[in-house]
Image (cartoon, rainbow, N blue to C red; front, top):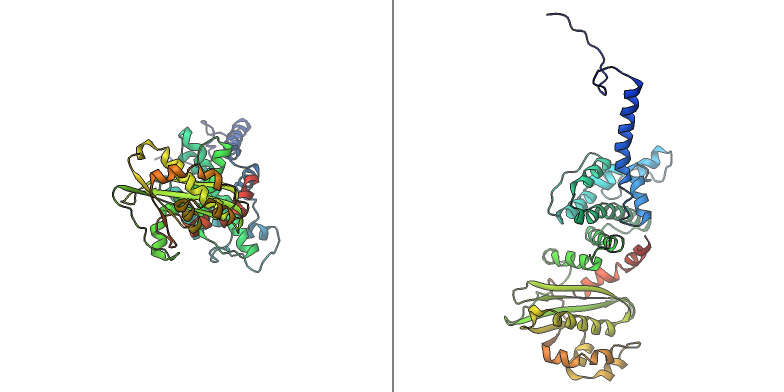
Length: 376
């Protein structure tokens, strides 16, 4: 056998020979590929501030502790991740490999019915992410999910470090849902309701709430077989402030037939409770498939229940300053009395519905962040 000598081969040219021309072509191709990865950050699917943040993040320029250390800036005695406190806080660890953040990624991916393994770097994760969903109708929501997750991680990290606010994985998931819905609605012209996405999340985890005893809730009481039950509630920051309303309609089997959630501006407590009943009635009356059913509305406001059952409008109006809804909703009174079988008053909180504490979580505790996000 003839001796064969080792030699260097330039793999970027079919001849195996190096040339300046082939080298230049190779570099241009690589720059084009890299540019497309970063170019897709600028999709106009979220506020520019967050697009800039993601661009910096993918370039490894977000100032996590490991980056600050490389720049010679000592901001703390250790470089540990503030979430898990077991690994160095690098970009790849904080935004992908940390057990807290990877848990958030898994939950968000599960919304799409997918199962995915973490990449070795965040940049590789982004490369895979942008190619995973190709359907035009779904792609904007899918891409905005990436932005929402990394921004929510960064905000949670800063709140933990600078404000000593502990990490709440459920709250982070709610914020991701809200951001995706908000951005999709206001940047993509879509119809996703951000507060409804939070509502879906809370409804989905009701059984988990009962198991972990996060709230002292009693079991939801089902109506008779010929009735439907609308559990409604309004939540207001203090006696007069930002308000939200929501409701869940179920049949005797507990199946959710419809639900709603909405921000209703600045209201007092009574106004919010009247609005939520009016919204439930309007929604129920607009559904042709529900006309054969009688309705139970479960409300936890004694004043509102007494008004509907006794027509004591003046007393209701006097009980709450700045309330302008008594007269408006009096017009709905005949409809309500004809179509609602029972207006049930309940002090107790129910399982698997949105009542005061859950609404308060979705609206009150998140209000500062939600409204700040309009310009974020």
